[in-house]
Length: 125
Image (cartoon, rainbow, N blue to C red; front, side, top):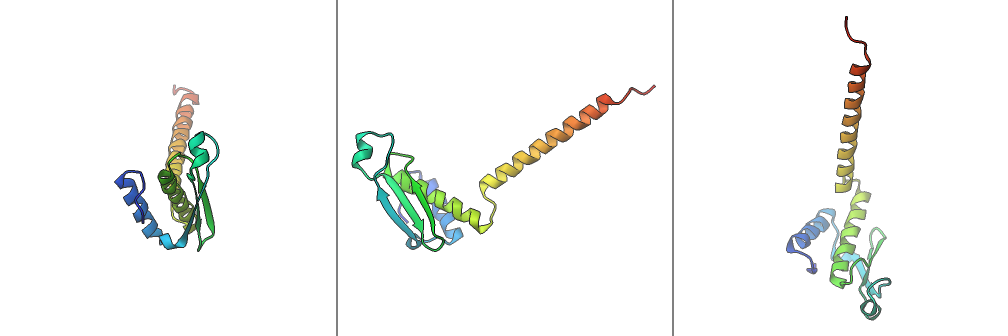
């Protein structure tokens, strides 16, 4: 797997994540397209948009978030990994965060309900 213009830590994370999900570079079809949008002449001259297709699952990803092709290659692979992870049924980081927020909100609601129950009851005489 190539190294992208991101930190070594991020490259390592991507490599490990792809291995754990069984995604091989040979299973990915990669094309480069000219981007659209902001970037001016640089965008019009260079093919910075990255298109990936994971052949076994048929998942397609198109990424043109950055003006750098190398960074877009990393971001596209990260998006592909996220989508395949969702299909596999494993809990993603996003699911874990959502669950944590849900539990926090439930705890707040419970506390508020208990507080109002105590204040609503008449004082003991």
